[in-house]
Length: 309
Image 1 (cartoon, rainbow, N blue to C red):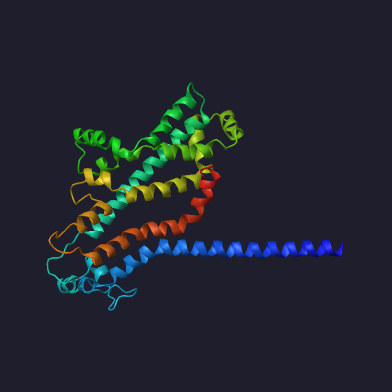
Image 2 (image 1 turned 180 degrees about the vertical axis):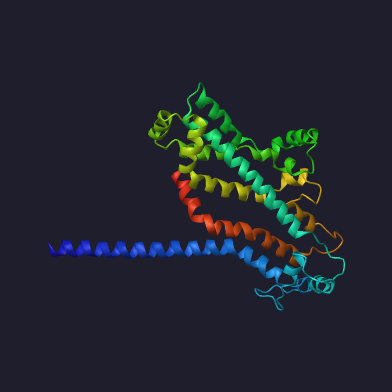
């Protein structure tokens, strides 16, 4: 009996030691992945704190030899001509209106998010709660849109926008994304399917129609999922590049993604302004980083609740 007990104790101790080793290895791998993910952001920030002449001279250490915030002042338009020359080493350096491009990104992303979340919620409610003929078949057909690469519909959309006279306008930039997307409809439909139907039945008994049920009953319950979808949609719209590049030729309506691309291609006969470009990139990513810090936990919880793996 004592021999058996000792053997079981030894086996338990071995399993405990193995579990601790496994957790240690898992945490070590996780830390390596985190460092690999964060390092590009650190390097972009480190480059933004350097002068372009220093970078060309071989200043490639983990810390800049002579850090400066001139590039940040230059990008937001607060640097004098002398400071621009000091930061870039040349008088005719590339430039763009960062504040204007930032406002364009905010306007475009906000309009797309507002329209897409509202209309996707209406479509998801119809597919989840209303009963009509061929509902499931129509929903399956709609989801096949997820398998169509966006590049396939780029030219048809461009021709349509051109014929409507919407080139170089905010309406032309937001039009293909304003109403709904298959992912947004699927995401909200998964949640709407889990809402207790007794709530709708009680509202119908009180004389409410479907629109009243949708706005007064369903939307308040789905508020966390709506916020999650809004964040995902906002980030996607913020990072959109190809469509604004094709439609928004005017600098007056170009978002940050397109403006950064134009900035990087200026002065083709000289070396790229890496310090200015990295500084603008960091400032462009900062709003999305703050958004994820504020809503990151809610994003994970809502996606898990909706059944998306």
